Figure 1 (cartoon, rainbow, N blue to C red):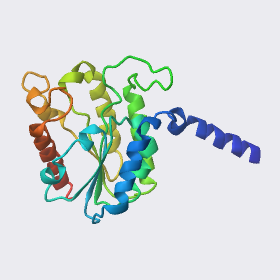
Figure 2 (figure 1 turned 120 degrees about the vertical axis):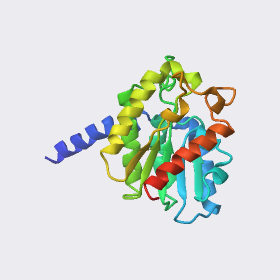
Figure 3 (figure 1 turned 60 degrees about the vertical axis):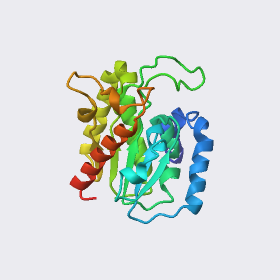
Figure 4 (figure 1 turned 90 degrees about the vertical axis):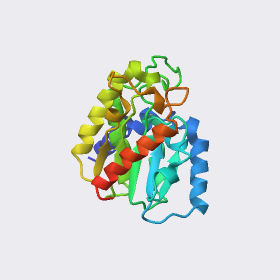
Length: 234
């Protein structure tokens, strides 16, 4: 019986996303260490909002101003994927006792069919795989913060990745459905505000790369987020 238990545990570990994507975290390790160092000297109240995720979080230079009167903690890095944030989520949240955690990760599907021979990091995930990685990320965070609200901001429709929007929106829908089935797990829909009357992303909300938000885009983003927070009474 004991041997069977060990075999079962070994099977579970072999199926874990942490093992499957064990090379995905190496690229961003130095960035995560820098963010952890911030935790050693930056102090925040328990009423702060903790933002984690990819470059749209990291590059949000006006977050403090845009999200006022909320206090914010910014812990974004590089071009985060769910396949690497599963390794870092605990480290990003463990030092904080925030009012809520907000997640934005938008790089697992981007219309890229190239393959990295080492880790396949460049190839797109399927919508169902993105959902699985998202669920695992939530379980990692919940192992530390059992009850606080976790709010996911959906992947924004962008001009540069519009060719992949069908897959991106499918992943968004799967994640939204999962969020709606769990307590204290919420979803922010942004597509209705970033797509124009012509059915295409509104280019005036983006910088030259047509991927990242400009000042107008961040103002709109922050307004959408604050509307949701107000609705949730956070």
